[in-house]
Amino acid sequence: MRLSEKVVILTGASSGIGEATALRFAEEGAKLVIVARSGDKLEKIAEKASAFPGEVHPIVGDVSKKEDIENVVNKTIELFGRIDILINNAGILDNYLSADNMTDEVWNKVLDVNLTGPMRLTREVLKYMEKQKHGNIINTSSVGGLYGGRGGLAYVASKHALIGMTKHIGFMFQDKGIRCNAIAPGSIGTEIGLKVTNPNMSVLNKLMKHFELFPQTGEPNEIANIMLFLASEESSFINGTTIVADGGWTAF
Ligand code: NAP
Image 1: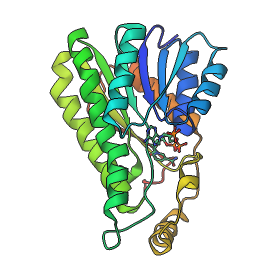
Image 2: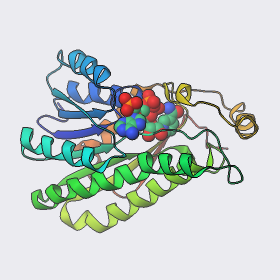
Image 3: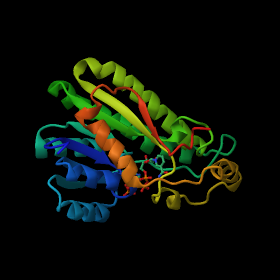
Image 4: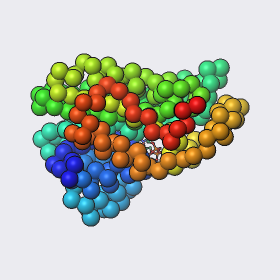
């Protein structure tokens, strides 16, 4: 097993890429704390994972709340005494707003979940990873973190910043045995788009013109497999960088 006994905090685990990653990691023997706001969904995933060799412990938490982040980290330490791997995967889209119609409310909400949450969680786990002298942090960015035309303004800005944060952490902590990488998925078949209410159609239509050239959608499991590679020792020399998995969407 590739993650035997590894202690993992995984956010955004109640559906989509996070759910697929939780199950894949449990198959490989990891001890996971899975985090999201929907406790019932997390419980069902833990039940599914009970067929696998790993352990899955649900903790309900909102990554945009500082106290929830501290609770997740404290409970993980109580349960397992260390944190080997952190996966900042929770994320939300904006309503496809552009700079002329962005609201403070949408901007702050998206940045809080997609960027400030990962920063705070990283800050908390580093306290333990530095003492342990090892650690592995993986951030779910997006092709929207590399290109301008793959999302609304707040989403694109947050995912670009997450890639910048990944490079900074990878550089600053490599001498302490800690790695940090990002994954930039293209379009993956999850619920994320269904959660958008009241999208700005003129921005969305402009983005969709581009999307029409490449309508291929990937499966959550195809991203979970890359998470597994980055979490395992097979990727030991990969640090501070981003793996794109988009079936070729950004090849043109
Ligand atoms: P998803 O099925 O909607 O999953 C999003 C996860 O984030 C859910 O578990 C959700 O759970 C959780 N979440 C949202 N807000 C949260 C909060 N405030 N606190 C804690 N958890 C929160 O979508 P997905 O596609 O798997 O998205 C996972 C990641 O992949 C995101 O970072 C997304 O930006 C990224 N991504 C997705 C695609 C794609 O095409 N699907 C492409 C590129 C990047 P609760 O609602 O239960 O809290």
